[in-house]
Amino acid sequence: MKVVLLAVLGLFLGTLGGAALGIGAGLAFVEIAQTSNFEGQNGMLVFFTFMPLGAAIGGIGGAVLFGLLALRGDTIAIEREPAVHGDR
Image (cartoon, rainbow, N blue to C red; front, top):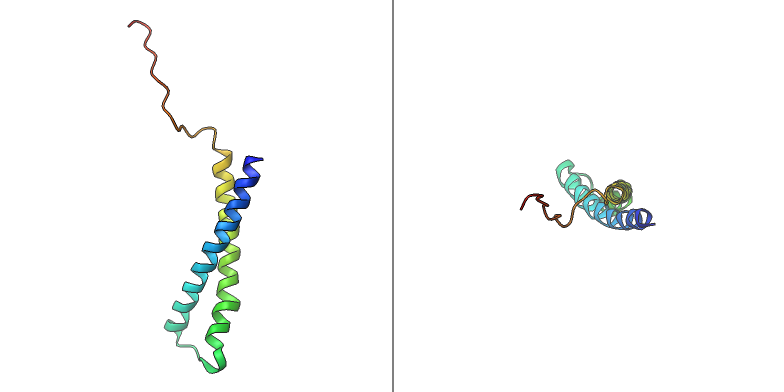
């Protein structure tokens, strides 16, 4: 259950982060490629192409990353075990 919940959290956070990065990449592309801004074509390009692609890639990546971290959660040591010395 922990794995599923963390994967859903990763999906949500990855989608938000990917959409934000997609908008940034789209705005950078529009400036570099000098695309036409006739009737808001730049905005449509950014928000209908780059943002959904970034959200999809970020959502899948976040879900996979958080899911793998949840699967490995038992092997990550949060506290150190005290060292046991036999002859002290």
